[in-house]
Each structure stands twice: as structure tokens, then as C-alpha cells.
Image 1 (cartoon, rainbow, N blue to C red):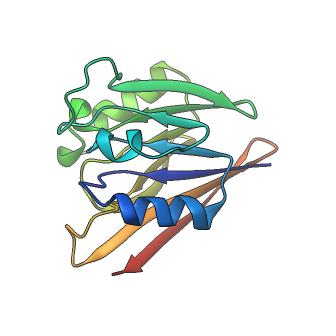
Image 2: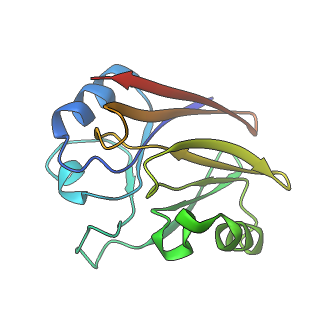
Length: 155
């Protein structure tokens, strides 16, 4: 069993990010972009990060693929795939790459749905852009099964 913290769009909320990292005690942290500087200044083990539309470190990729417990995972901020206008391009890429879980951000709105056997997770934003809410998600992968716990903390 593997627990993964999924965060996106911190936009300078380093304190909130560190609090969530300490509280969750997850084996991995997925950072989906906007502001890379927030995670780079913290010591986080097993961090996988992608670049968002506010990030200018071009050494960091826009999309990453990895596998945990035989589950292929795609990480992206989402702007490259136009997620504010729908998930069509993201769905096509996930199918092409044989992914079972896709984590994306950019919209600042939490979302979790299944399309054609692929799970799409947006943890929302760990900044107060939407009604003062700081949101993130914890994913548990257990024997190839994916469980998602959406977190919604008012600050």
C-alpha cells in the first residue's frame, strides 16, 4: 500500500504546503505546478513535480509519467491540455500512454472522475483562490486499486 499527497497551485502558500506534508505522512508527494519555488525551498522526500503556467524553470517537465504498484500515472499541470475547456485532450493522452491515474491542476477546482477506466484527479488549489479554501488530495494505491480522499480545509 502506498500513500501519495497530491497538491497543485500553491501560489506562495509554503506554510500551508509544509503543514500538509507533515500532517499527511505520505510516501510520495506529487506537485502539479504553480509555484515550483514553493516546493524547491522545502525538503520533501520522494517529490515528483511538473511545471505549471506560472513556472519558468524549463528544466522541469510539463508532463511526467511514473509507475507505482503497477499503476501507470500521468502528472501534468493541465494548461498544455486545455483543461479549463474540458478534459478531451487529457483523456486522449492518458489513453495513448496507457495510464490508469491522471493528476492535473490549473483550474483550482477539485475534481475526481473516471472515464473509460482511467481516473482523473484534480486536487484543487493549496491557495485561497476559490472561496478561501485550501484543497489537496491523498491517493492510496493498494494492490492496483486506487482510492482518493479529497481534502478541503478552510483557512
